[in-house]
Amino acid sequence: MEFDIVIVGGGLAGASLAVALRQSSWRVAVVEGAVPVRAEGWDQRIYAISPINQSFLEELGVWQRLDASRLTPVSEMLVLGDSNGSLRFSAYDAGVGELAWITESSLLQLELWETLKRQHNVRVFCPAKPSSLSIGDAGAELVLTDGVRLRSRLVVAADGANSWVRQHAGIEADFTQYDEVGVVANFRCAEGHRNTAFQWFRDGSILAWLPLPGDRISIVWSVATEESERLLALSPEAFCESVAAAGDRRLGRLELDSAPAGFPLRLMRVSEVVRHRLALVGDAAHAIHPLSGHGINLGFQDVRALSERLLRLPQWRDPGDLLVLRSYARERAEEPFLVQYTTHALNRLFKMRDPLTSLVRNVGMNLTERVPVLKSALIRYAISGKF
Image 1 (cartoon, one colour):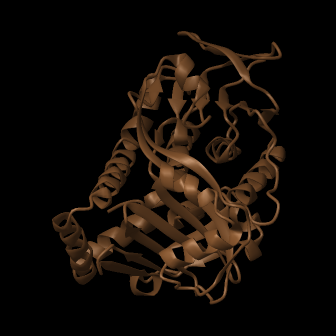
Image 2 (tube, rainbow, N blue to C red):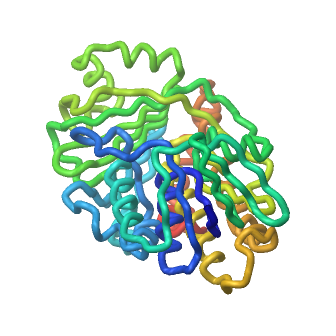
């Protein structure tokens, strides 16, 4: 079967890229291993979508189709250190409607797939898995496990941090294991969150509370692997008490709304994000610590940058041309690098337990709170992805 672009991975990055190409004449294939399903109750996989990416999803015609009753704007964010350090960010002070939007992964994923079904230029192969990949001067060929052969001029790897495409293309990935687990769960709160997100850096761990509609919150608690085993083994009542205590009981008593789960945390950097006829996007190109909340936002900006270049190409131009792909790589070189190293440095800084380091990092937080230009720079990045 002949295509112009084959996207391997139909998650948020891969599906959004296919949707972004909806008005082009490119023939697009999407290869995905499993059909997305709606989570029961509230999804444990929660994302904080930045305003620039909310606008991007709106341009795709996806955002406005989401169930508004399951979206939550973040009006304020309070960041607290381990020794009276604090930072407060306000959408009102920044002159914007919201700092971010909290949404469920499955909600966004399903709407992207519904949009894909309406596209004239996309064919979805699902459930399907690749078995071999060959890339040459004239084109690329991806063979699926059922024997179907997909020939294209460009292959896009959007198949996650353990990317099959990246591995079979021979692109090296450097993984740094944090020996940490992100513990996630949803709760009902006794007191209203007022659309405020909280983040605590303390005792070598990072705890984030993200507001959900009504009286609910979602948490991501980054802790040492051994501590995660202890937390996940607690009774529901004891787990709720641990989370409430770690968050200074800001929202009163917590009641578990979904069973907790854990996922290992790691940093991943690749040697290159493009080759002739190959491009990496999303987690296939970079993986970061969740403390910044920018993982999926980086992925959407990868998609925006790549799709803009492909949409500008005349029909006679080869979408797998290395010159085209290198311009995408150059644009996306700086932001993932800065976010990866900043989050990595912050993670290491707050793991240090000695009193002098604790003093320095908390003084730094308080200084940032008192210097408007520094706060403004951080808010600008959170909103627009640019300093």
